[in-house]
Length: 180
Image (cartoon, rainbow, N blue to C red; front, side, top):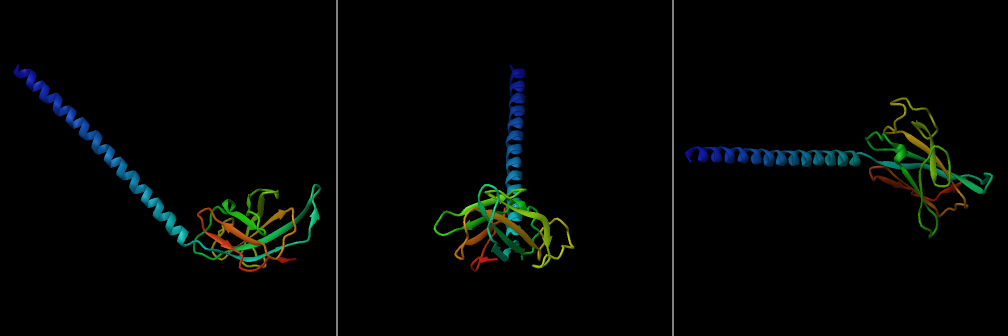
């Protein structure tokens, strides 16, 4: 009988060690996961605080017939006036607020379409379209992005544009859109 008690005690201690190992491992894994998530949130918040954009220029041009309907091209320039490089400008969304209608949302597209905006892939260091010289292909602080989209109605001077970046930072026009 004494041998059975020793074996039972050894099995009990072994099971206790296994359960303790699993519990401690689970707690450690959970703590690592929470720590990594907090670090990512802090980094995201830091980047968001350093990101700022503003409109530099925006206007619409005379209409033309595109083969299916009359469209008005709208051109805009947005300045990265923060201290963060914006690595994914194609994730920027553009909204047009036209009268009392719901805002029209435009996502990036490689060609102009009914719900897309477009840019040529280059960034300008001033509003006069001087070529970028630092980090070509990235939207650095101090550089403009020149975008355009088309609408199938005539814009007016009460329309407002807004851009929203991937991290939630946005900019809205501060004065009326003008006709070119």
